[in-house]
Length: 357
View 1: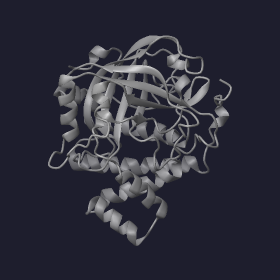
View 2: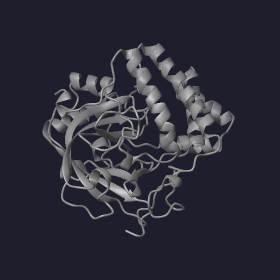
View 3: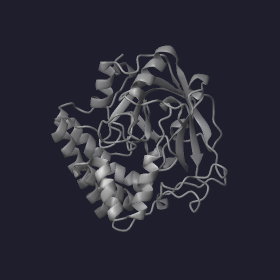
View 4: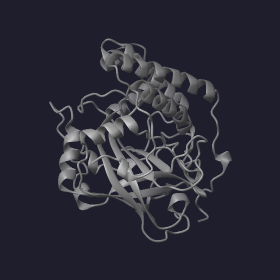
């Protein structure tokens, strides 16, 4: 389609001092990760540490898609096993009453194609989605602001409240705006949410953001449904487990193609791409059958063995933009540290049977 932006390597523009700033972010995240390990004698992910369900499903590309959507993995009909990890965004496991973004990380198995990372020998493609179309700290410098604040939270004896009080005494308007957006996170039912990649990826010949939206009646009925998290530290895990003991679920996987870099930038993931300019278009269906969503064995495998990373990708779906570039560094660093100190080797699954029941 002539009005969709064609992919080219030149679309990415490295930010001034990006390498130095990225190094500072990575060092800060490492210090926070070490502090968490020292406190609990166990390492967690730097982000989305708390999981609410580890699900087994199938991604189906049903029939030939239009040419602009028949790209990369989606270029021909097919069915692929998937593992989905539901989560909350903080890098330490806290109660579900804590405001947080919710995650929907997809690992697609049996994917052919040249991988982006030279040492990635697995046959998987990951898409990491969150229940917001944008990320408040959408470029590398904003990311640094937020990470510096999170490190102050880690070392403040009063935690988030203490660090926030100090911020009010030394105002940083941009950081305050970012924090306000993060703290506005709702406590709606996680299974009724629509999830977004927030940042862009290559989409074969084009550029897109990826999203997943409820499609079956049972999950669509949960959209906007509030969850009472008072005195329920694991409320989201409980409702996910209860749901999948009774029902299956279907989600539509969608692509929103870029048409104009000025209105739909790649380098600033804080900008929401206007759906009136480019709509989300269905590229596949994800079907999740009834199952035990959080058995002890499944939780251990999903949280300790698996690693979800947008850079677990084939070249046709290469992550794009400064936020994705910093993720390449910090996700790998976090994963290596977590698996090393916890004594659990990292493995990319080759077959869905590796996910315990």
